[in-house]
Image 1 (cartoon, rainbow over the protein chains, first blue to last red):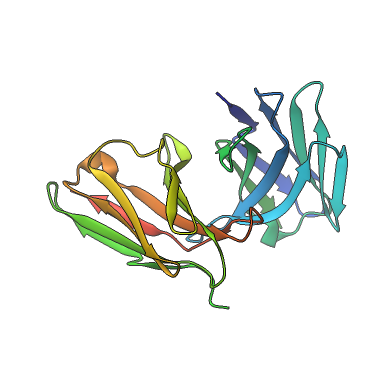
Image 2: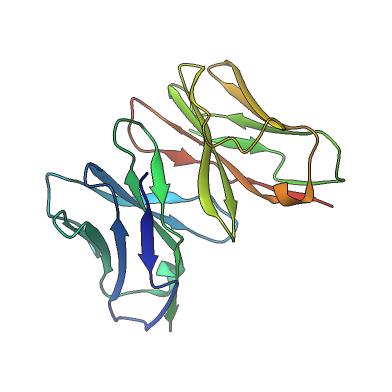
Amino acid sequence: GENVEQHPSTLSVQEGDSAVIKCTYSDSASNYFPWYKQELGKGPQLIIDIRSNVGEKKDQRIAVTLNKTAKHFSLHITETQPEDSAVYFCAASVPGTYKYIFGTGTRLKVLA
Amino acid sequence: DAGVIQSPRHEVTEMGQEVTLRCKPISGHDYLFWYRQTMMRGLELLIYFNNNVPIDDSGMPEDRFSAKMPNASFSTLKIQPSEPRDSAVYFCASSYDRGEQYFGPGTRLTVT
């Protein structure tokens, strides 16, 4: 079945720097890759997603890239701000279903 | 809209007791998901419904867990009997027509 690996598990950056979180997936038939942000005491919230027919998607300071050949996708946050501090999860769809397999999460700390 | 509503937010119970978690999805959404989040296993899908019908319950850990959705605005996840290893944060999420999944704030369950 589908497996998603996420790295790093923790990431500290200085305010204003960029942050990159990487995920790999195992099932080449996966076609949808959402990214979620989870703040302390809250549920995950979708911040950006990408489908397999697109290589890159950008929304203001957030971008996601997808390499289908290598089966990996990445989240890029530019000009980081303290409010970006949270746990970020990647996910990959399970082909033929409406299920996602989530990565193990990355705790991002933006240092002021 | 108030978003996905879960109750209770915190539950502490003794091993062997029955626990019932409740969820009210966003009005108009036709999909409802129950997830469990632990440090060891991350975010796992337990079961999901479409139009109140269970579609996939392959993530339900064992017979002690059961979920129902008697109508479009209410779902329950029941654990009977509860065990300490069931301690986790349980999230409910809903979506419309396979779109973005909106998560509730979660129920933190502690079984002593």
